[in-house]
Image 1 (tube, rainbow, N blue to C red):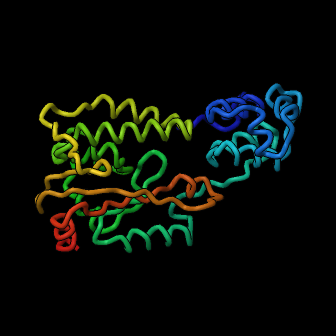
Image 2: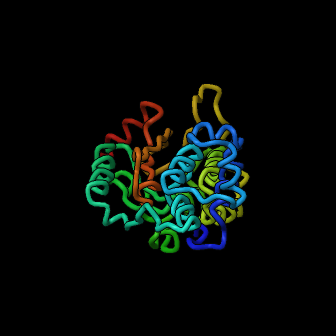
Image 3: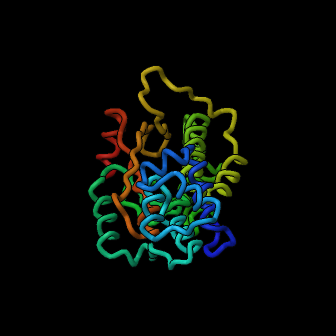
Length: 261
């Protein structure tokens, strides 16, 4: 899990760590956050304690995820600002997620959290996930584990070596952005799988992005994906939700998805 709230880290330590993670200078951040470089230096060295408003301005400039922002507030002696509710308690936001998933049909789409655990899926995605072994189908279903595990969908991915490398790079970028320990643990697990030697389908010169090529009972699919997130979330759960949608990359795939729909 992400490092626990209420650790012994000071607000100055957190500010400095995230500033360095973002490769920003004190001068750069101070100008953008509307405070003096000296004041920011005092905060980082523990000689000054920032206000709630100043914490928010600094976190905005450093693109600190809401989960981590709560640690900033606690370290500065304030109550956390951002609630974390279960997905099923998100009300209108949950309805919006389900509406987006339904609106994407016949294209497969799924809502996942920061750890890539499945929160909701539309009918086409549920079709592709049917038949998983019990160990992988047991909640919470992890979409990366399902895709890359040898007992999951990996045997159906024609360009597994390429797709695996692409997804591992994506997880590494997530770790760089969020500092989430659970992602580091998931990455270590995924790296242990390794693609079989047969999964050597190379990228084609015409590919504009890395596609997902799958052999299925319905035919061979070539899919492109997009990720959708909520703008300006104030809840930790909502901040970490992404809707992953797979679109057809060719006419054959489009026809198969329409027939399934």
